[in-house]
Length: 104
Image (cartoon, rainbow, N blue to C red; front, side, top):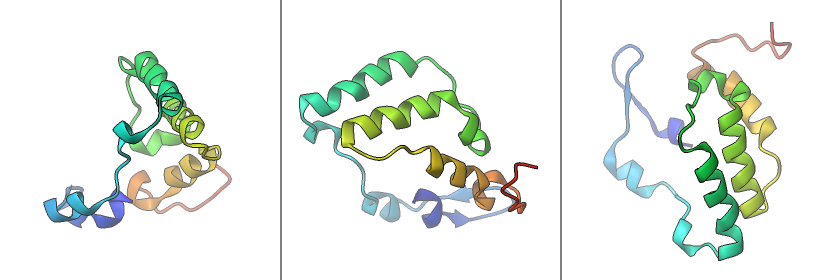
């Protein structure tokens, strides 16, 4: 959602305007019950020192998968693997206009 509100500047640079950032919906982690918060905290403890791969590699990033799985479990969301795959193909994030789903 954040990338949809970006403001392009020059070349590969973008910026985000403060009024737009303030209006974006963000999960209030403090409003979660203990049973919902526990998988998120456990995940944080296990991934907080790990590196994230660049966004174009989101589909292969094991750390991002673990984070997604924790939030899916906590919030009763479906598996987010398909969303990561779609994001990996998104031209803005992948910096490519190749729309081939075959992986080639």
